[in-house]
Every structure is written in structure tokens, then in C-alpha cells.
Image (tube, rainbow, N blue to C red; front, side, top):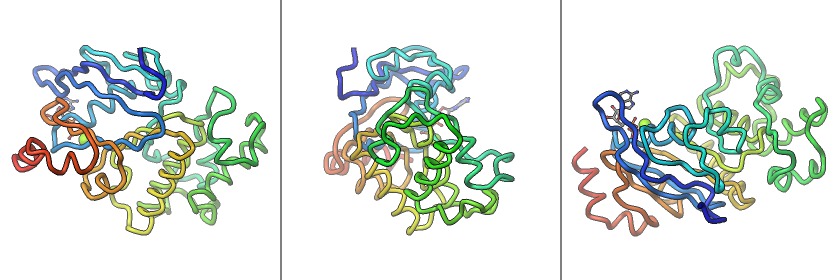
Length: 257
Ligand code: ADP
Ligand code: MG
């Protein structure tokens, strides 16, 4: 159903909350190894779409396919076990633990070797089950995000931007195939923002797939090769930055905000 090269396909997705239709028949797909942007004015249905994909909400109707499998109605942990993960804010309990402890406690992948090993060639061929291996992987991931110097710092003491880096790093401990990012750059200073985007691009080169919701239009336009625009629960337009920038319907949708 979902051709290879299309890890995610959303088909006729609909989600109603009581009398409110938050998502109204949205269909789109995301290519493997892409950084795809999902944009739209406030209330367009972006977060609800994300939550339906991640299993947080049960869609009213429609389908979500991941790597050819119908995952509609899966629980969040089932979706995550398939390799489709979203970032989580650091929970309060974890703020009282160090950055390294946060990494060690991150959910783990259950699917054996995957592309993370090509980003961390030192770990290739190892099954990360032993404490030592896990620790090494945690360190390498912290190095990738350049927050290894904060390993012994309490997570609660990190700046907003450093927290975002840790949130991303934690997700990578599980060897995801695809990562859903809902406003990962909110409150992040330009230096860290640049760092995070650079890491996302590097991981994308390795075949990891990202779907990014972000308010800052410049970030989306400059970083996403494919952009999906939602409006009133539907997909209004799709294409590259130039296509979206010049689409009158998109301009009207944002002017009406
Ligand atoms: P976006 O993320 O694009 O701003 P949302 O998906 O958050 O949009 O919301 C889409 C619409 O659905 C809005 O009108 C919002 O008020 C409504 N909505 C979202 N979540 C709920 C909910 N849990 N209960 C009722 N209405 C909701
Ligand atoms: Mg939202």
C-alpha cells in the first residue's frame, strides 16, 4: 500500500472532538530521508494530525500507514516500537536527574541494528543491551548534539535550547526510523537552533525521516524540501518552498489569520 520510499502515508484523516472537526479529510505522504514541513495558520489541525499519527488521538476515520503497515489506532508505544517517534518534553522527575541519566533512561529501540549505527560507526555490529554499550551510545549521542560537556548537569538546570537538544538526543537512543517534531525550535537561541538543524540534516542524510511543525516560516522555507500546508483541517497545498511561497491560496489562508 505504501510504496517503498514513502515511510508515512496519511489517507483521508478525520478527527472530531464533539462538534469540532479538527482534521477534515487530510491526505499526504512523507518521503524517506526527507525533512518535510507541516505548516498552517493557528487551529489548522497540525497538532491534531501529529497526535493521530503518534497514536495519542484515535482518528474518527481515515488511515495512517507507516512503512507499508496500517498503524491506524495503534497506541503511542506501539507506534514508537515501529520506529515512528516524537520528541517529549523532559518530565519533572527527569529534571532532578543528570543529562547522562536522562539518556540512559530513554526508551530503547527493540528492532536491533538500524541506521543510528551508520551515524555512530563505533557501535556498528553491537547490540546495545549492556549497560556499558548503552552508556557509550549515550555519550556518542550527546557528542553529536554537542551537549556532552553537560552530561553531569541536572536536566532541570539546562536552558530552553539545551533542553530541546536533549529531547532530540533522547529520541535517538531508540533508533527511530522517523521523528515527529512539533515546534522543536520554540525558545531556542539562534546558535543552538543552527546546531539542531545541522544535526537534523546530518541524520536525514543517513536516511532518517523528519516531519516538522514550526511556526517560523523562514526556518521551514530554508530547511524543508517538501512543505505541506494545512488550513481548516485540510491539506491546502503541497510543494517546495517556491511553490508554497507563490500559492495565492496559502497567502490568503495566512492573511485571514
Ligand atoms: P494547530 O496545531 O494547527 O494550531 P490544532 O490541531 O491544535 O491546530 O487544532 C485544530 C482545531 O481543533 C482547533 O479549532 C482546536 O481548537 C481544536 N481542538 C484541538 N484539540 C482539541 C481538543 N482536545 N478538544 C476540542 N477541540 C480541539
Ligand atoms: Mg499546534
